[in-house]
Length: 215
Image (cartoon, rainbow, N blue to C red; front, side, top):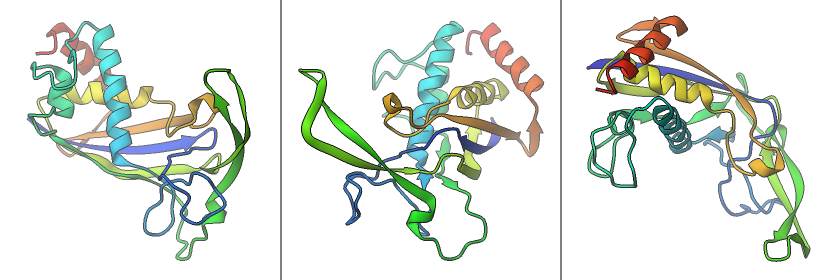
């Protein structure tokens, strides 16, 4: 087993909208989730979900086994990294929070904007009457950071390399992707047993994992 720490930096190329549900007394019909200081964030649960989805796609492409359905307890690289209903995940995923510098007082309007949109009638494929919505988004160009974002243990460097590749492949965060929201560049820093791992080492470790058939 190895100790793994992963730092994440997400630089938004378009506004990010991670909905908190409801309007919280604002003009928005849907507001974004924030931390206790009012900073927009990407929840750790979404980091885990997006990373798992990307990891399953990569693993399947490389011929590695992946779970066939929710609750599949087959021993796969995906279960070893992300856990399953019967096996606790060996990693903890933290929130990735917008970098606002040293500001002690944060006004929500400094860090977000309202975007108008319309509700689409799925049956007719046209805009519904009187259904103009205001959606809150974090500002374009905002940088979200977590150091660390992921901590825990994994069987070996190959598993860490698969997670690294998956995180690098995530280029959309939040919701409303069909409206052009959430495009971002994700930078990943992997530290194993206290030593930072470069791209060449991680790439070779992933190749070795494939040669071993995910074992």
